[in-house]
Image (cartoon, rainbow, N blue to C red; front, side, top):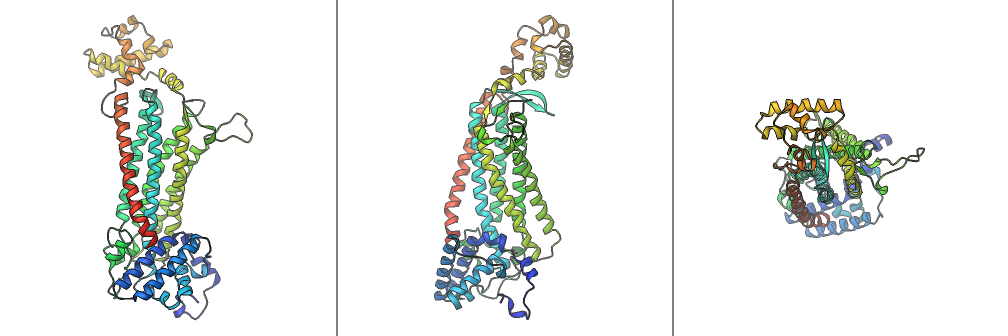
Length: 476
Ligand code: ARG
């Protein structure tokens, strides 16, 4: 018979049984479910709702169930619907009477909410660690390439000179915001719904602050209706993961471009690329393409959950059981993408000569040429027009700006002198861009140092939280 079978006089239809069950995907919450139950049992006994003997029997029973599940000795069943009822049924089977007291002053509605928050909090910590690893790989590549000139692009047209380090450090910044977004999300998520019951709290004299503290939460959720029906935290996480994947997909796209024959700025390591079944010459950037592809999947998870939650009346509705698969899918997907991307990035071979060659064409020193005239006193707008004319002239002659003779240059503006050639030198053009945030090597050194400091700081924070909370969370 079902745990809730009292009200019923017929067996559940077998189709409904399977349709209704969530155990095949929420089974993964068993650790959190058991941690929540342990905290609940402790609190119930501290508040005099259950006896210390029952508490001890429950704790020992749950301890045993936890290690048996960990050891693969437990088989969950769809007849018990979800992880909460599977664990509870198992407990009662093992310890009898006391097991039936565990669900006092609790509902699966607050139970599932606490499980998911605990689970996602742990996953966020892991995700943050992975993003920090990727940032470290960026820092390591950037350190080697502060002097490596490459064309910076707008509209995918060569625009102005930057360094490979500068380009990579842009991603370092984006990922830093992802880390802080995930951190914020975890902070907001870190309130405990346990004790909200089905929706309207309970008449038992429980202590919600105690369970919150035991589980490492910052405090209990303030409103019982909100506590059991809120899924913002999951949506927020999916939002943060979607933005993170958007960043990875842009990075992935650039890697794909860079290792094409048309660019050849980098070469992927053999271990991070794949071949073709028909074309013997191929070395494909499948890893980057898959990361780009999986981005769509994570966006889909976000849109799916937003749509599930849209228009749901308070408080719990069974629709909300549909929250888990998209969140799990997104978390699993991102957790697969990050380390493989990090490996791809740290093993890729940079080809500075091809970058330099590309930087040499496309007049990316044209702005510097206009700046030269401006320094000699010409208003920038006039300098801009003069250099525009020069570029047109060059395209007709098949020459670069620095290949024009002084006479040719002076035909456009008498302000040109011998020192213009130095100003057009690409290394110098990049090196002179010393404005805060620019590509000059001393500026990228500052950015790099900030990035490394950021990584260190956040690793420290993350480790503390894992150390402090995980233990409590896992062992009650
Ligand atoms: N398996 C359910 C879920 O994931 C647990 C909560 C069920 N609550 C209920 N009243 N049916 O949402």
